[in-house]
Length: 214
Image (cartoon, rainbow, N blue to C red; front, side, top):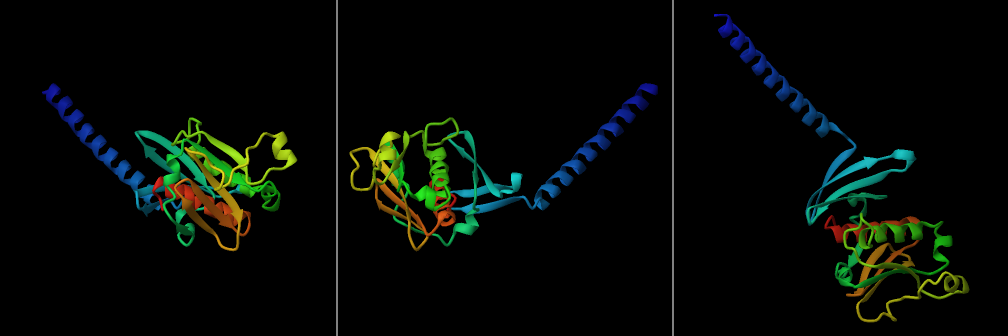
């Protein structure tokens, strides 16, 4: 009789524990749904989960993506909804087939944009380059669109859309009146903006295009 009572008590405790776990799980799911720091964006490549991080007072939209069973995290200054109005023309993904990729800008542009054009270079390089956190693993080289004594000292190559050889591609960063991304050819993409912030918007747009978000 006592053994039956013990079994019954264990059974009741087990049921109560199971119900408690379900209740806790429901609370977790509900809280996740209410978390204003997380949002889902439906893009051409599917659903993408973003987490808004404001560490250090700088707001970043942190994206988690999976490519070939590998997990990558990238922080963007702008979320995809903020960039839906950025003009994109041509197939900007073709340049990813380049064997060597250059990201080029006028040597004075970092000064004119308070280094934000250089930040745009880094935001693109982290996706295309050969670091462990880069998806495409393509040799990616910082370049200039016109040579100066300083760029020669630093051994920065001069690259534009007009002096590429077979297997090379270039992303050219320029100041222009409108914020847009233009695929001039399969191996030349131009990103434009009137100032540093708009250039960053163009750079983030290009990166999202590569990742299938936009």
